[in-house]
Length: 115
Length: 113
Image (cartoon, rainbow over all chains, first blue to last red; front, side):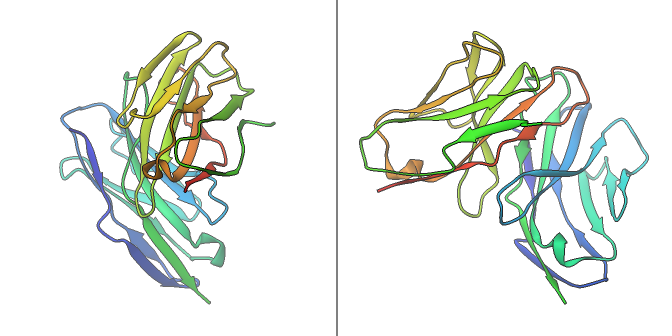
């Protein structure tokens, strides 16, 4: 079974500092996508960043970057220069290429940003 | 751009009542999904559809039904509501190409009392 594990229920970071959220996954598939979604109190699910498993280069989107370790099945999210607006739930998610395309989610990490 | 629209945003049901959660998207996406999010948990797939007239069960389908008569609409029906169905429900849609992201509605918070 494919599973996604986020081992940090809550994290806290000082404004302007850097924080890393952890995610591991279990799969026997070789071709898949990985995602980080942000869910602020408004409940809206917002895509932060995605990574194709066949790409060795780590994805980057402005202050957000990932450390993708395919052999270790690890996919961590680094947020640099943290801002108050980064406070939210963060979900790691996985999707197999060529399937019906549904996402498999971790339980989430609640990130607090201290001013 | 409306994207994915869910109605209602909030609802309180009594045990045994039925209701339909509406979901519509204006992006001409073939793939549509219903997820539920329980407190402290990630989203779990209830049902999905790969096109009009085609639906299939996800991980947690018991107590729910869906239909897909048009590309735009994918309603979720709750029959005989139970307290275990108290949750936040999300509808999502996606293009049926390989590397595309899912777009989510804003969710429906449902409480069954």
